[in-house]
Length: 92
Image (cartoon, rainbow, N blue to C red; front, side):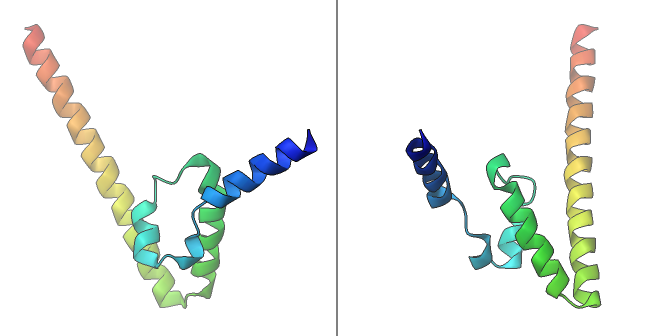
């Protein structure tokens, strides 16, 4: 039984993404789409990189990530609102 658990653990590690080899643009692009089983590794690497940045770089990164989140949420809301409006028009 222990052998089976070890094999399962090693197989997951073999297919895990190595975030240390990615640049920040690649990591920012993945934000919001990281598989659940890899989120801890992604978050740890992102925190490590943020700590290594100076204050100005950190502020720029936080601003960019906040802006990306706002754009994503804003786009999602508008498409939901439009589809709801279209459905209401069809019902009339």
